[in-house]
Image 1 (spheres, rainbow, N blue to C red):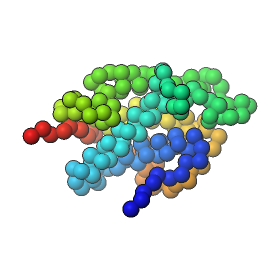
Image 2 (image 1 turned 45 degrees about the vertical axis):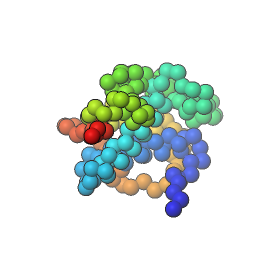
Image 3 (image 1 turned 120 degrees about the vertical axis):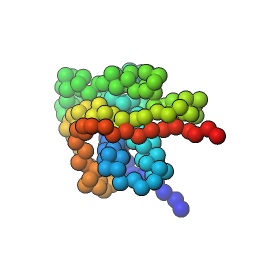
Amino acid sequence: MIVSRPEKLTHTQTMLYEIDMLRYTARTLLDGDLHTDMNRWVCLEAFLVHFRNLIEFFGNPRPRGDDLHVKRVDVFWPDPASRPTDLQLQKLVRIDLWENYETNTAQRISRYLHHCTEERTARKDWDIAAMFNDVKDVVEAFEKLLPDLARSWDIPVHAMVVRRVLGPSSGSTATEVK
């Protein structure tokens, strides 16, 4: 079997894919319709990957040369006449998210997911609702400023209906050592 992700013809579509996947996995986790631990873990890890990609996009103060980043305005708004104002763009820069989730060692997603580290044996609870709420406003503001929201994939209706979430909702990652 050969499987691939949807074709993304533009850098904007790449970021829309990240946003759609974050919403889909958040909604799926929050709905609680996953019937096995493995399904929950797969969905949790997908949520964490897309969450980390988005906080890096909006907040990493030192993106690598080929990283898509909100400060690379020419990639998303090639026509200078259609670019958002400097003030609108500055509101999209969220270094606080990067610092909280990737600089703060206790929260560092990459230590629990991206790399096989000794920390992976410790239980780590992820507050999906709080994490989603942390990025929701900046994601929506970015989308509103994009000149083109075209996607080459279908979006499940329930995935687009993730509102600000209140109350306890978490997942956890850990590797059991026997």
